[in-house]
Image (cartoon, rainbow, N blue to C red; front, top):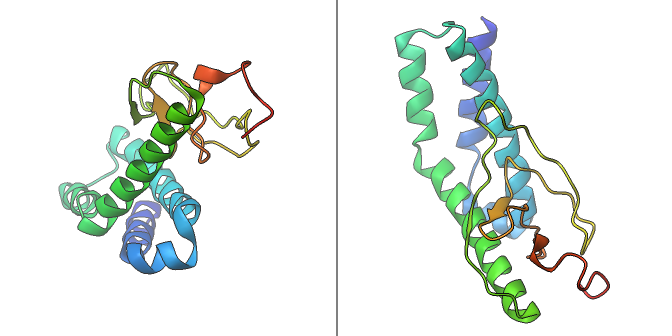
Length: 157
């Protein structure tokens, strides 16, 4: 089995085990984020294989079908809705005019994966999973914090 075939098999297995309701009960949103991060890392390797013309048309179709699976997209949307809600609650609590949130961009040639920590709760952040605040461009933490209130209150999460 080639490395590309192994990656596609791995992607399929990871997506197959994405059972949102049971995962929420057992590992919560952060656990789902870890699983999605693994999937994103496999997809990144497959993107590299695609750029190097190492994928057959059948493999491209298989990967496309896996990426468009209901389980994968349902888990991603649930995570993004959770982070968006937490960010809205945080902004309201801090009296910040919220402009919205978006998925962090890391795929352009001039972008890189960001893995900072939250100044508010010290939680780990990752641009593959955490959303980005439309106002400040910082990653949104699980606690809802972004850079909009950085420096104004770092003692009361």
